Length: 247
Image (cartoon, rainbow, N blue to C red):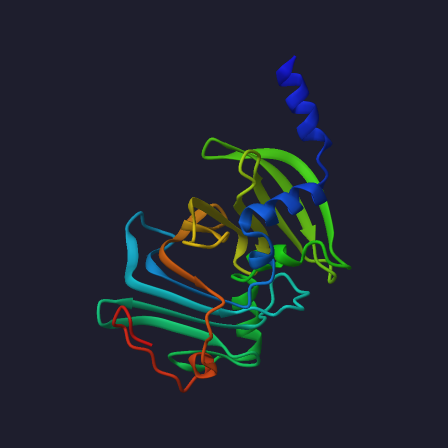
């Protein structure tokens, strides 16, 4: 009887209810209204034809400035910079300054840049899910690594869809999936913790897949929210050291 009551209560939750609880679990107003985020850790990258890693970043960092008016799920928005190093050797860097995308090789042509970001950006759109123009729908529940999930399909004002998996117990966001130029892209999130003195819920482990094949795995060791970031971090002319605390 209790099991049936629990199932009925779960079924009664709307997609909007689930998204509201996910936002509260992620950090409430601080998470919804985040201005910047800095993450650092390590990463392992894989190819598509071997079980062995293609490369490892012993120093992997990301700087983000969020767009509070974001409308598009999988397009470039705000500002971003990613730096991957193996010891003192830079593996790659990529940035978007709000207008231009660039790498260590120079400015990236717009069509190539659009395809790159359309294969990578997507998680942050869930912060805007309850705004006008967005549509949320429940789809069949699922599970990930033994964690039952509520599955919610979020459609942005342009009609682009993103699938989110929300933990049925903790309401942590454990999964995201969407169609990308590289194929069906899935990210899974695990090993959550609260930032000291903050309601912000951070996943230490993030794993990325394209068409079901693991592409890379990131282990975030440090996170800082709403830190002031210099604009030149995001410009092509900026240089960042591969030292663990270099900028």
